[in-house]
Image (cartoon, rainbow, N blue to C red; front, side):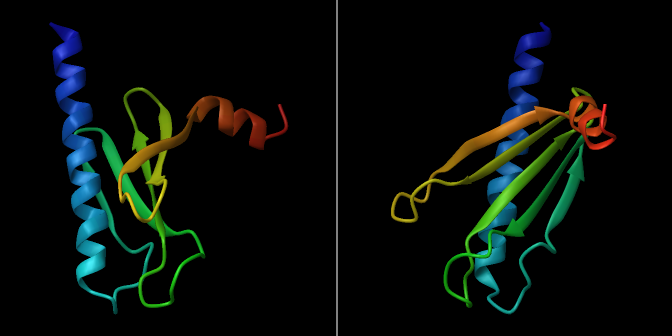
Length: 102
């Protein structure tokens, strides 16, 4: 019964992340990187990639899974397609250990 709960939680985060990214496109005056949201042990943050037009820069989505201690990075693979894909991910303890030089 644990797997359906995880699938539901992951789907909810993906939908919330998509809503954040799309909401950022509605207001061109809003700065990229200011949209963040936390719910159910997940935090989603958007940031500009530094590419694209000044009025609508390309953005990526960082999802922090506090329970699983994971960082997931999503982005739009092709601007024509406009589909969000998983670009990468890593374990937070491993990242912090590497940052400390260990």
